[in-house]
Image (cartoon, rainbow, N blue to C red; front, top):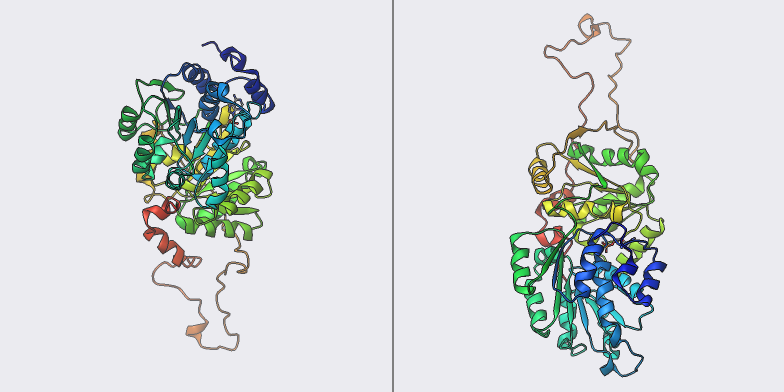
Length: 456
Ligand code: AMP
């Protein structure tokens, strides 16, 4: 494929070309160049593409192109059976993928819908019952609709598993197997994953038929457009280190900064702390309702919230166009999460900065795992951290020796005190007692660390 390929070269219908021109897409990204012709030709595809590469359009545009002949204006639901199904691991990703697909489908006459848990099922029910050609869904809620007979999947021609690696991590395999059994055997299947573990390869073996492999980056690699930095800081210095980084030029100029933490508790706490320092921030985690999350995300996109503190699951699928900086306040436990986290920046060829704070010793093992996975070495830089005045707590106490009484005439007590063992010049700062939250963080169950249990 030549470098100068345009969307016209794929032979896409004018209705689709018009929509993508409106979205400002000028030329296809590498994954689009590779995947669009294959999907148009009806092949099964296994796409090794990280978030931000333009993978949604790489399956979405040809998927819509293949369904164009079914577009009709009939009011009868029977004339609008579900013909394409896109499964995603999280609500946010479902919402994001649907937002893109409905924008691409704007002039096609094809109907699209998005179904995910955590919101009232009745609104979705009405939409599905009216008939819809393309459904984007999270597995649990889709099965709820199947059980309630709001949807039939017997006419699905194209199925997409998006972020398949995350689906497996989140334990969706049984749900996916149930859903796949409801689909016709003769269908086109597409699977996208940022990482390729043996489990993913096994799933691909069962799910795809003679798939064409489409790769745009080395396995588990991180985009070259992202500058990655690692700073060594002690646990007690982390907030000050973050403030230091946020004061830095790259962050000062940034409209949006995404900060990752490993638990919901630290997510809430860190956002509150930053607010106290006058930084507009909010938290996005699994305990928030869907409505709250979308509201937070909207404020973030508008720039009303500068720093969004997120857990891995909550941030999954977040697509924010202008995200120049991602900060790992905590080193992720899972090396693959690092790839996903920093994939939020440097998207579609733009430049990004990813900064990771690591505690020497405690985080070394996880950082080495990231280095092994992404086949790179990080230099551990020291960050000059200034202890800041804690808002609302007054200045930090400085040690001042007690005054020597001028009336004392005892020669022994009038002598300056000379310690027999060397004493520190300044008192050592009282170690910060771990808060209840910090303790809970360690004990938090895995599901909570991943952003909460999946609610149907
Ligand atoms: P995705 O990897 O599908 O999440 O896409 C990442 C971002 O790139 C989204 O904001 C897309 O709208 C955008 N995008 C996808 N394809 C293109 C393209 N060809 N040109 C410009 N932006 C694109």
